[in-house]
Length: 370
Image (cartoon, rainbow, N blue to C red; front, side):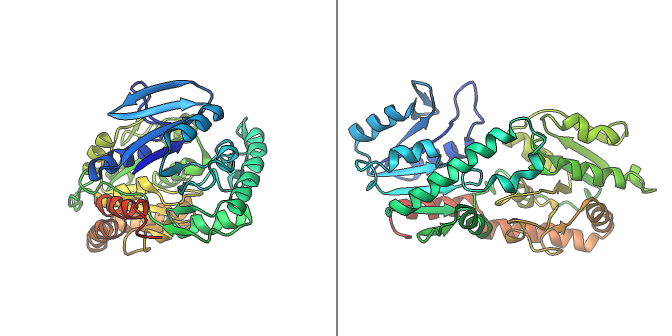
């Protein structure tokens, strides 16, 4: 088959992080099948390049029309279905091309679910575009009968249906895959008081303010000096969120973006992974930490409970006070800590192992799992 992967951004040699997870999928598909995969990035640039042996074209909606008309693809795989893509894909020439569409979140959820970012200067612009996006998405669902939608969690599907005000009748749930070889299990019994936080600090979605508040509460405990805390990330909130804990000798701040290999190394050196959230369709960084055997302290909201059974595979909390209490309790309970660590690894192997996920996705692409 000849397959087009359509998305809104893709890695380049000088910018390797944009939708890197899409590239990871494409590389695995190419290595596992004889199908021909090409990538088109819909933007305002006109460019073509090869990235890591994958052929990529960038261009406008008009160029996308030309590519679809001339190259005769058997199927289109879409990550982040935007309203600009929809304008092209609903045209009579292209509407009958079979499509598999991954729904990741921002393209299918109402701006009202991001109120926590309202202080952001660009929020009003985002809200306007979001209303347009949801309108087009609903129209797409009304006219296109040849698409299969992929959601990473049941929560993601339910809220997308509510916000778009339409049903995804032809859909499947397939979580994002976790590389359980890269994020391999190591016993954590000697690392119970070593706490790791790796988060973007550019959105309130990631609850870095709540995490740092929990650590500030922990600093008031008499045995706080027994803990070793590493906070890693970058973004506009980094200095603000870490201000009240930055002067402690046992708190290390690293203001940078990490590669997956660097993340795995930090996993091997720590025992507790702090990852509260205000909204998450899965929690990939949380799942990676679970795969490595860290005890995750996360939030009891959105899709998180679909991947963590509370007090069995991790600790799910409501607020900073709960997080602080959970850290104190689990770091002083050898048996529970070890059990949760091992159960977390087992859960990710069963639910999110990358090899299994790739196999499921390829079956879907081949038409065997509709």
